[in-house]
Image (cartoon, rainbow over all chains, first blue to last red; front, side, top):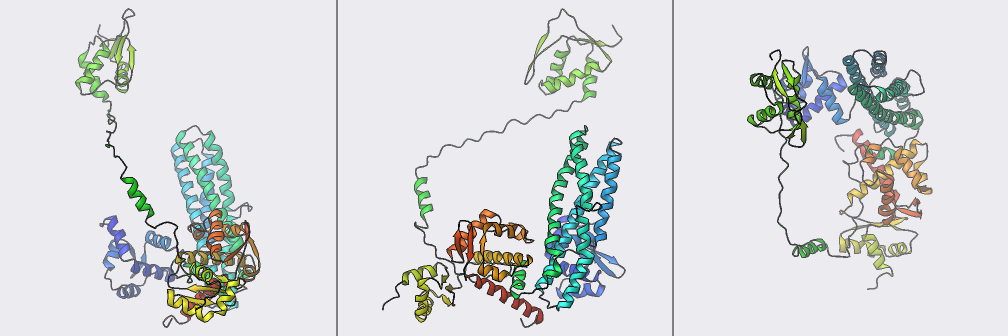
Length: 398
Length: 180
């Protein structure tokens, strides 16, 4: 249980972001935040916030050391766009859960509705996580490969090729297999099957809730498919040919890569600001406005009231049933309805009238009507209704 | 004092931020009156005149940072993408003609697509066409060849030099983070 307000925690992170960022960097590099490292970081920024870091559950104790809780780690990772490269095995697990959920959905399509709904939601969530993981991994791999191409760390050619081979062998190639739609076991291929099934079911399932879930799933898959296709293209065009691409080096390209990585932070080359010669005065707009404003005749503004609020009325069956029982015998049921509603501060509407009419079917009243009686007219808020004259007695008593 | 024949044109174009190219007649007049124009622009406007063998332009603290940044992003992306395709991007920029179709394909296939889409001058084919033919054209950075075709003038070298300097600065920073 966290005692602090959510806003307090978010404000705390905003306020001490430099510390949090250092903690994030340390954990990314070392996998853990040593007790001594935490002290050094706090001292570096001159912030005595260890208690709050623990109290707000941002840090967790691991023996004597610490780690950022997963939720905060992922938040910082996301806002900094600095993702940890995921091993293919960490992404492939989504393939298993997606296949298993899909199998259970197809097999249990006619079984319990509640579990079907839960499985559909679970499947949707797994697809979302899978797509996000692929995207995050592509961003990370792209950053790694751009760094290799830019080579600002001046790694020699041999080490550069070794690094590139490592990325290709353990990350890029396996990710490509996961995304390769032509590969029968790829997750993308599984998603094609799911999409086909969802498309069919969104048109044929009769239960509206389930049908809507299939429809959402189908449209989610269209979007996921586009995203995955983009990532797959990126792999084919940019990451797989990495070794070929890093054979050449150019100082200009290094500069451009560094520039694109932080284009809003570095000053661009000097380019003279052109003079602006307007064919009209720069004040022409304001002058014209002022001139025309003197001829404007202002009309009185009228504020119309909003439409009357719709009266919220909940039918209290027990109450009206009791009222009806107490009133028995009733000469004319609809007159009774009218009187009851007026007595209780309301007015006659179709909704109320039909609700009260349901009392006739409760079984403890006997409803009598005579063919000789002429139908009577009832005026509700929105309609005029002809209704029979109904005589009510207590059931079983003549 | 007798001013050079194209004095008015020279002053107007340079103050408009234009690159006066060596193939233009008034470039020779600038070159022939180099000393005069250096002091003229310095004394009258506080601007530096830069004359190379290929162009003349003014440099000032009054810089159009947004335009310069967008042009730099433009050159950065086409250089990066052409290199990715295995082309010698410097030779291609210097000697080739480009069609809007080629440029659009470089941008749309780029892995910097998020940056492209967030830039109002480069985000789609219409914006790019306006940017190239109007903003870059007005400053003599490109030569319009046809409605959809253009080539770069020597002005591109200013941006390539900038990239080279930036790389050098980054490398120096990495080598000696304290003194740089």
